[in-house]
Image 1 (cartoon, one colour):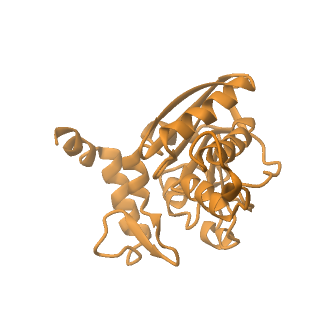
Image 2: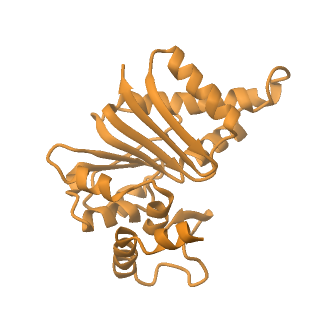
Image 3: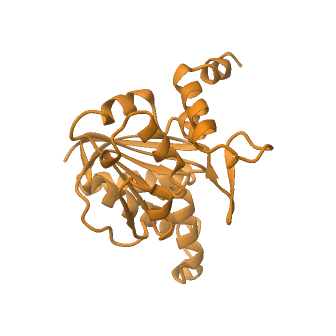
Length: 228
């Protein structure tokens, strides 16, 4: 309880809450302190939710204000978090927002944007100091598994979806790591895969030579690139 109280009275969190109420007045349902109504029910979240989860920190904001620093946000629609970050002082051209939904360009406004599916090949976009998946990584992996014909034919080894999920997750994270600067951090929030899947993904990446430090729990995943 004490930890929760400290979190809710964090000055940075309070600043973000005030900003989101100002920037997006009238867009939040009165019955939810974190979610935003969308066509897919409640897949969109308030910027303050991403601060509470640890996806974005005050230290990140300070870093990303520096010349040359860059943030990549994947699955970013409706880009409320990223617009809030610009209001906090991060230059818009330090941020790139990505989504498979072409509506991302309209959502992002003057923030640079690209359209592609994170499950597919990622185009050239340079490198980044922070890469975030705001509630999008678990959805992308889950949707891809549901659409995969091969999942239904798996009959041995781990749970039928474990191997597929770990491969899909590794494919996404591999492409993210290729675009992460040394010392950079990848974070994702939302319901994460089973710990077994996370472990399999991490082991596969390390076998490929990626030097990473990984933290994960039920609603959070963090990966830091040490060297390659």
